[in-house]
Length: 306
Image 1 (cartoon, rainbow, N blue to C red):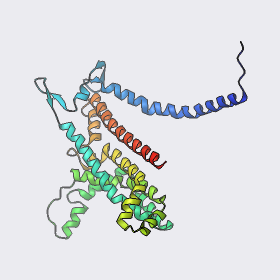
Image 2 (image 1 turned 135 degrees about the vertical axis):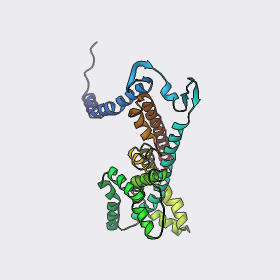
Image 3 (image 1 turned 30 degrees about the horizontal axis):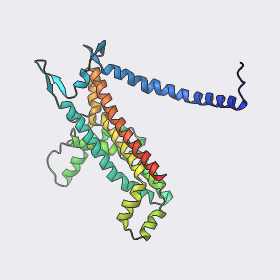
Image 4 (image 1 turned 30 degrees about the vertical axis):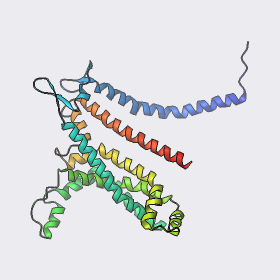
């Protein structure tokens, strides 16, 4: 029994399918080569035993790297609780959360003010917001060392008005917090401004016509409509701040380690690659949970609007 020859429509569908695969394949190969494959390698390293002088012992599998988060072995080879790494994680989460809150408190009024300006002035203000991106972040972080150190510009300015003594601002959590807020503030302003720019301001006028005051219009009209931009800004600030490396390295020193510094130390000075890989996966898991929650919330909003 002979098979029927494909129709013209079937041939066109096959050509279209091959064309789609031809477009998808390069991107899929890039994602697999530079994202999925390195993650698989790190997953394998995290369940191996560390080598004597760095690296790992291939074939020697162990789960000690994940156990080391809260447990360690004492001189008697007994497992005891060690909260040092948990304190670094909690410091990282708290600094990142405070950074997100502060940038939101500063970024939302700024974005709202820019969105309410005439088009020409709006372009100038957005240009000013983007100016920090013209300078390398490492250079900008170094500038805060000159400002915060003892004898720096801030202390010198206070001495002019009669202040005496050392501030000791540098190499503290406060210095790291200042650096994080300064570095990531534009990442909060830009997505919120994008949402507010598309806002239909006739809805705000209608709220005023119905008796709402400024606070009610802000709370019940502007904030709900700007929620996607606020959520995007919080993610764009919190996740990079959580994994920040050279800001706490330069402004916090050894007193204010964050997760990024801890991971670097494991691959560097400590030469414990499995534990560094396990720390990386713990950070990745937390970020993926946040992204999943955001995706679910965004999907619910779309379903509610439809």
